[in-house]
Length: 113
Image (cartoon, rainbow, N blue to C red):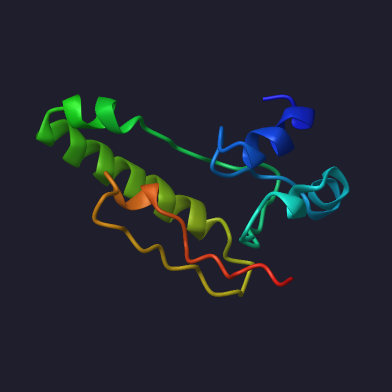
């Protein structure tokens, strides 16, 4: 999505969230169309895995279990690369409606007004 289209998309409910830097987000007006912020520490890259829920449900349970195992191993490896960062690792709560543990976000603090 083009950066200039993010604010209207957030405002109209076309997208649920976005990832940006604090300067660009504030300059573009993200604070006017969002209710919360999660202070995500980003390095040289960001890694996101998203799976369409209908597609996930079509997978064989053995394949789902295999993918969950592999993603967990990948997540553990990614956290291990942050050894130099002494901040606590966020805990991820998995809502009952989530198809997989990585599908939920850490609790998001309410944005101050």
